[in-house]
Image 1 (tube, rainbow, N blue to C red):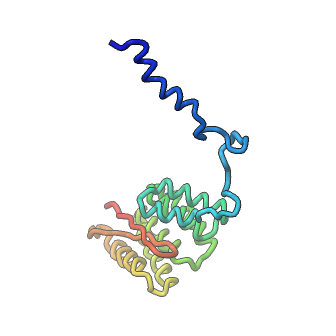
Image 2 (image 1 turned 45 degrees about the horizontal axis):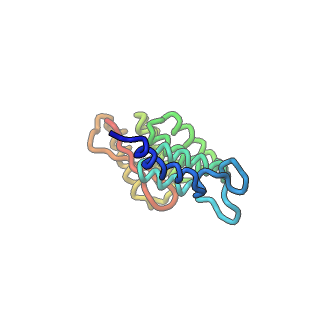
Image 3 (image 1 turned 90 degrees about the vertical axis):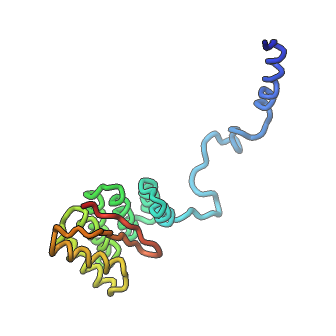
Length: 187
């Protein structure tokens, strides 16, 4: 059976620890609010870079947040719009992905990753003819240098010729810079 003095002896260190001034939640410099922005003299991490890493890790919702943060810093340029469209595609939001990728193309009609990723969206929607044309354009703009775009074009042409074509199909999302995102087509 515990005596009152035993209970006090057990609780005394906790009470003393709570009274110590270790910093804890005390306000810094009298400011009671959380810090905002980037500390003076430091640069923030590029939202596109963070988003690309999150996409690679399969964290598509977090990547989308990072891409929107990038948009607030750099504006809705072709890179940001293409990235947002790709994240929406990975989240299964095909309508949103198509709309945003078309906006990216309006910003820069010569940007192969946006055309390629739009082609992937169209394939996911079963629009094989339009997807084939989009992949052909992406391939031409890329001068045939991207193996991913070439593979997407080959698969799209096969699917356009025979909609029942059911070989294991893997369409690849591409982005500017290193790395490739993959999406599997569902039959």
